[in-house]
Image (cartoon, rainbow, N blue to C red; front, side, top):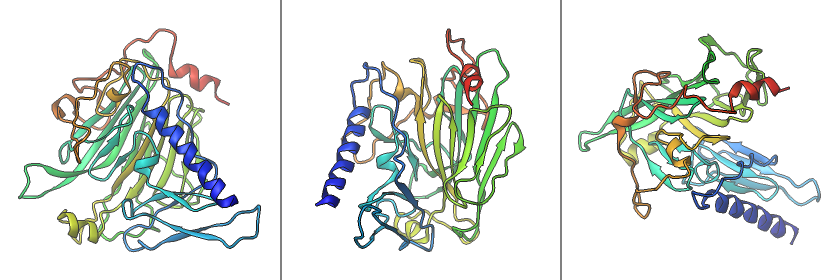
Length: 336
């Protein structure tokens, strides 16, 4: 009975979270909730699809329950303990990008954005924040487009008129994938970032005390937070042989197409925000995609093309615009 009650509470909390995300666009959105403290992540990887985790309940002596990732998200999932409730990142974390880039917009609707192989695209652009993504891909001769995945992310942030900072996250090209080998590359303002290979290890630059990078796993997983600005979960994952076979991705022995699964949360965006994902957070955003479609696709790729991973020259760029009464410099100065 206690387990059923706990499960009901979890479901109720998730329903409330989804209802908030699906609220009327014109209404102010409440600050997104953080992941619950009782969560665990399973990242099975390429050859460990049967990886499981055990949840115990410290309040009783019942036998531990066992959880493993659903077939919808075999590379990674979230488990809430006790109770072993399992969720895909694409379902739980707003703004998530998974696989052939699928995003969950600020309006709560899922959509695909294919971009182009070897291209850089503006994911979000606001007065004090700009995020680009670099796409890798494979061309299927039977299709008119590339299969694409996000291989790297370039983040620029800083108050208008001030020197901005640059954070780079990349998934290194990998031939034979091992979940225990770290293929995550990080750099801050052009300098490599090194974090001890242990879950919970934290890096924080002296120049921006509000910025932290925390390992969510000993390898290939981090959570990047800038207080009051963004919260990003990034995990490097491969394309498995099975996925390649089923979807005809064409994975070869010299490249497992390591890429990111990404989760985004944003705070204090302006109503002028734009970009592939950013525009869906605008109060005046009108979703013109076919939400009933099995695979709604956002077009207009030329509007989001950037000249490199840190460039702010896409057609919808907003970075650097003056914004009265706000600024990231204020947020970081108050951070302790």
